[in-house]
Amino acid sequence: MWNRQPNINGRTGPFSNGQKSMERLTAESVKCPTCASNISYMPEVKGMMCRNCGNIYDANTMEIMGSFGTGGEHDYVGEQDISAEDRTRHEIVCNSCGAQLITDENTMSTMCPFCGSPALITRRMTREFKPDYIIPFKIDKHQATKNMMDWISSRKYTPWGFKSKCRLTKMTALYVPFWLLDCHVNTEITGTGKFDRGASKVVYEVNAKLTYYVKGVPFDGAAKIANKLMEAIEPFDYSELVSFDNKYLQGFYADKYDKRPIDLADKMFSRLDSFSLAETETIGMKYDEYEVRPEKTFSWMSDVKTRYCLLPVWFMTVEFEDRQYQFAVNGQTGEASGQMPTTSATDKMDFFNNMVRSNWKWIPIITAAVIPFIIGNLVLGDNSVSGFKTFLIIFLSTLETITLISIVASFVLAFLSQFVSKRIQRVAAEVNDYDKDPGLDQYLDVTRKTKIDVQENLLGQVLKETNNGNNLSGLVGDGIFDTFIP
Image 1 (cartoon, rainbow, N blue to C red):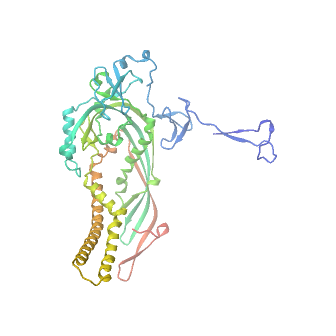
Image 2: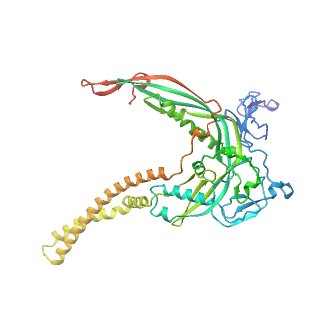
Image 3: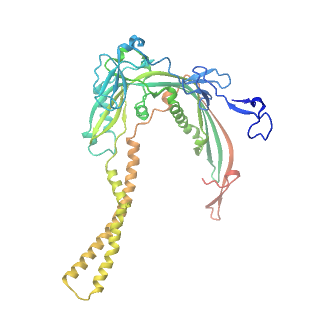
């Protein structure tokens, strides 16, 4: 907000042309009532949001409307501050990748679940460890291995021998920190709907408002874990969610979060947007053609609440041809997923394509251009006939033929291999990528009201113009859709 400050002692400013009392404008930032940090208005929450403590306030009354906050955790400053529960836990730090893990005092530290390094250092707790809830492990190592191998066997377009030669090693049971999001979601979706009336098309602007509630949408709070990998092994059965107890930690690692809910806010907005956009099929069922206009689609949330919990995950490293691939298995449901390598045949095709398009391609082209001049000089330069001269002409003619055939064949094969390679890569990327997340149906709060309001605004009617033979020859439109092509 801007405050006016008068000139001191009536002095004029440098651009006042001698006039008195030129006023200055100064900026006064709005502070968070909780932590006194600067806050700003966020359209995604329809309120003022603090990026420090995560609280959300009403822009007019400054009353709290929700929070991306974490609760009462704090950093320890000395041994005397450590709680009794945390005294029974150890903090393990990987000397290679810097991962910070928590385990009970009886668990043997063998290797890092993220990079596989045995270089682990045990130290005292540096931050309070206080999850709200936990889902205990149900799937053991044997079952997790079987589920993972079954999943790998179902993949296509993998390198030759990957399924039979890969070895599952460095498998680790880890409690992953998650933030469970509950909120009220509002989305405005704008699209274009079209009805085909035979001789004409009627076009509408379709404005839809979606209102629904989600409960327990999980977002992992570990920076070292791929979000897509965790989404791929969802969902978890929250009916088995229990209050955190130190006994569940015995024999397992637990990761400490390094991303707060406020740090994941953009990720939350994006995922809720994808939930809403997936519902456009319901909106578009009425029309013969329907197209969403993303630039006019917007979601915001209210009544934001987050819960901190630990969810069980088996992490596995697959070693194949001196490379490592990371996979995960849901430690409660057994759902397995990962990102598979694609067949190496496409790499060979790409190498061949690059060779054809590189500067090396000029060698056979120049050779094919020079040989006819050499043969011409041999034939016209000397009328004498010798066995060596005849042999040389035949050799060069054969070389010219082979060179021309190889040039044509290389370009044809390059075109075909590029087409095949792109097709294989496109299909393999879809098949071998992370599995899709469960979507809105899994997290929709059915105990709360869900509503979809749709309004239509007529944009115009497009008439099909026919020639004397009653064949379609053009379109005659009305209003802004004069140039519309169906």
